[in-house]
Length: 441
Image 1: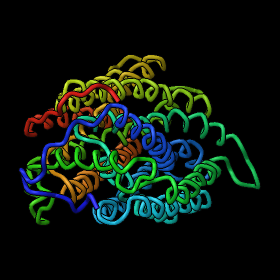
Image 2 (image 1 turned 45 degrees about the vertical axis):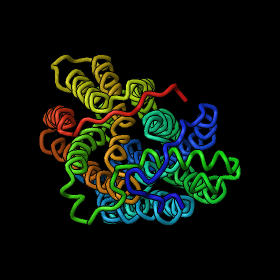
Image 3 (image 1 turned 180 degrees about the vertical axis):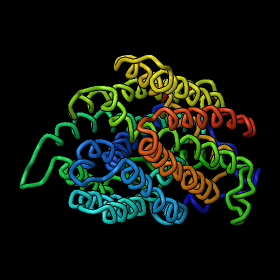
């Protein structure tokens, strides 16, 4: 297995560059399905933001209760993130992703039958525990197939699912909110209907994913060997194993974890409360609000692909990670802090924020494998993601708590802006790295 092929520097002969046609064929075979998987994952993670529009009224939940429920997802995620990611690297991405998706789909469906705050908290916690390891597992899985020079483009193409999940989820959830089937409110059907595809996809994973190039029937033996040789070349000189405490002392891992904590606090605080903020400044109905809420993510989709492509073209990672954070901070200032009234001004500011909200990801998630490889990279990605995703509790809960105490989002938005500015600055505490430029896939 490739997972156990780490070798000391100089032990592997230099491999020729992979042919562009082979690189493109791998991308076309893997990335569309990974894209669909991540659309489903993020849709089930953020549909709470749309359900909130009616759920609070039906169940009598305060903004603080909703903020806690949104955020507690990430506690379960944090607890199981690293062991789940290691299983992807050392056991089987195909089998473990099947388990992850099937389990979280079932729990997502159960959220449609919740009646109490305690039940809401429990199911959101279990949903996070079920999904733990999914995103970092996909990042590790991409490392089984794509060399460093292609990694930001590959991450950008499959992570375009993030804005697409909002673009699809906003009108879909808005339409479902208007139904009342079998005596159940529309917000309940949001969870039920959007949880089913995860279960279906989990079963399909057993047939549609391949763990390693050597196992791929759609590659020849020579092509599989060429991919493995190119990957081993990238791995030379990078640690494949570290002692448990060395991760917490590794400069790059620590910096990336802190930066990601700040980013997640801001992006989830903004994204999960976006429909509510738009409804707060308008008199529009649920469906109209959900349509407005997709506009920042249309901008994000284009911006993410541009940043990912340019990062690989130039071989630069740090500026391509920091600048989107500063763009998002500027957008939040325009839409949420500058004392100019009017819905269109707010929407324009939030669309500007959308240009940065996920555009940092392609270059950011190419960074861990620039310093580590093998199991060490898998653990590092899991650690960075688990610590960072605690921000998924901090941001939404902070927004809900401050809204409950002050009646507005302005103070919370100012804190999110400060987090983004600090996160962008901290990126430059990382050692400088670059990836060899390569023609587009």
